[in-house]
Image (cartoon, one colour):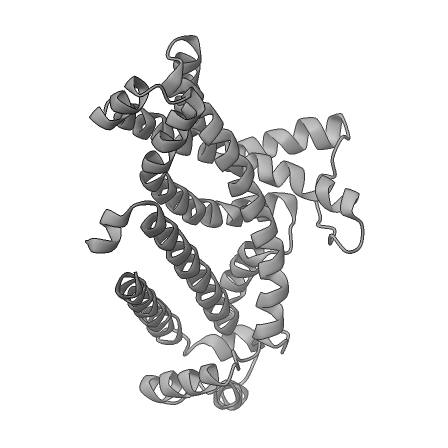
Length: 312
């Protein structure tokens, strides 16, 4: 198990090294005109040169890169070029909002998907057909369109939920729940469809194994048989959950824009429009770290459920 975990951690660290490095080269390699964009077209060449020196973008790219890595190792992500706000505090506060919505969506969708997938695999018929229809609809409906529909009907017309904004849990638990309900629903529809389909297929495959027939022939209660089946069928389903988490994290960019949630997605889009490269780098680094940690946790869970994975 230790060797398995070491390999997964090594792979995660490789991703953490490669993705931010490539992003840095792409972003800072085109940052020569950042001073002009910040100061405006009316700025003189002397002002632009002074601003470029202040930002440090007039130095060779490799010097900028090693300087960035050196500051990164001491926890300094830099400051926004436009607001001078420390990137560390900015992305930390924004990540809390994004993770609240994304984790809420994944938890609800995973529980619902496992329940639907297991029920469809055990009782094939109308429920199985309904699941197939749900999967097609869930994959076909764009998340941003569903978000707009929810805002228009449930927030603006019926006024059941707030249309925009985020309330911290510590400020008001009830308002916090109301503020994240529509974003969570908008993100979870496609996730339910994908995970439920995988759970259904995995459970059906395991039910056809010889050992399941042996368990039934020994007279084990149905719930114990289902428990054995679910343990062996969970590994591929958890892989889909990890992929769904990454897709949901990406989809949060559009949902945060629609619901005006102060999360990482909104910060990234605003920074991209303004050309605020340090903010974009901070968001990329945080999101990459989140993805690596989620994959590590899922790999560990799969390794515990399936010893064959650890051996491979």
